Picture 1 (spheres, rainbow, N blue to C red):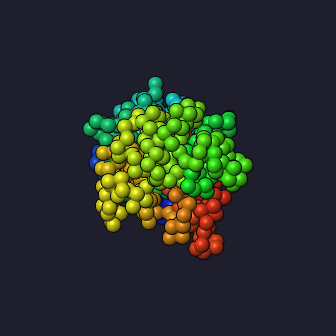
Picture 2: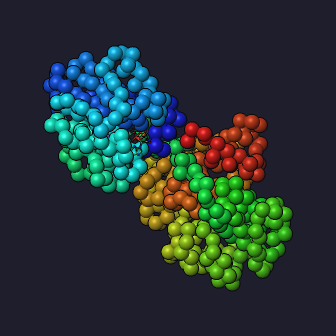
Picture 3: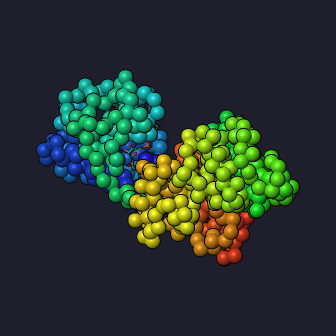
Length: 473
Ligand SMILES: NC(=O)C1=CN([C@@H]2O[C@H](COP(=O)(O)OP(=O)(O)OC[C@H]3O[C@@H](n4cnc5c(N)ncnc54)[C@H](O)[C@@H]3O)[C@@H](O)[C@H]2O)[C@H](O)CC1
Ligand SMILES: [K+]
């Protein structure tokens, strides 16, 4: 939900606007259960759940005998927008008071209680002052309307704490939250979040990339690139992109003949070569053994399409059961391979067609067909285009970052590397979505700064900012 919120804000729909819609929807919910002039007691916590309740009180104040209790000091309200809505109540002289001792909370004898104590921001069972307030609310003989979730319900899991609001009605926003499924007393209110905030990958999707300060080496992935042969730059770009996207270690498994050249691109890479000039089936056992100790394999960049190389790719995937990003020439074997691995395939539209996939000009039609094809192959597809389409066969996303400067060779290798790094900490579909977004953002920054004529290697230095530069995420 927080990710969708951030994506909506990036589309120009601010959280404050959403809060206004939420409060409006709550007021409608209260009108459904109360007659004009009845008493409505609003109880608000210090997060945005309380903020929604403040807005609702502003909508209800003319029509009902409404009063607001804030649990705590206004200075401790956690967000600017909730505080602004508290201030608006005070300025408008709407009955709103702070409660400094919730054990002494006296709600009187209201007809309706509006529960804006805790919402999706809750962690663990309610603590004071919220705890006593919840007990007091349950003791009153009134119709209780909960804001988003009954306070005391964990919105991630649906688990109900030992102390939780016993709601008669729930007005939840945008989507049904866990634990509310199947309840007859729930209204899902449309608060104006555009569908695009979920369809298009945005800065909110990057929220999952924040790191625990206690992290140690290996937590963010050991990525192994199997590539090179006819081309040397591709595996090097791919592995460097994986490092720029936060992987802890990047290995390149490539033929002896080019190992020195690959290492020459960057000392950060760990090059492990096999004999000869290209990948052959004889190499597969050793590669499978090496892959055991790695989180993700990226297979394809620069391998070429020789028959024996494609046979080796087929054998490798047949014997592999981890996560693999498949790119370039390796893609063509995917439809015929029988594997236990989780595959993330990164074709452009020509490569998708070569895999037997759909060719559609309109991106929305393409998205629907890509989803079907991903389900049919049982893989995650990231189909590159002006609008990249990402689908794991269930969830389908699109990415709008990127520009025509990125048609230059090598940008696909960079994308595959970012995807490899992301797939070591994220589910395949989300990994591919974030990778497409970051790769395109990096390309947009380069082209903004210098115009077209970018090199794929120009993208590398921009990847970290594209992933972690959004301070609001
Ligand atoms: N997109 C939307 O759906 C919108 C939702 N909105 C509403 O915002 C809340 C979520 O707000 P948030 O500020 O993130 O959190 P809460 O208000 O739920 O609570 C945070 C508040 O509570 C403290 N806290 C956390 N855990 C506990 C606990 N166990 N005991 C006591 N106190 C606790 C925490 O420190 C904070 O002070 C969502 O539910 C919607 O109602 C917005 O309107 C925007 C659109
Ligand atoms: K609530």
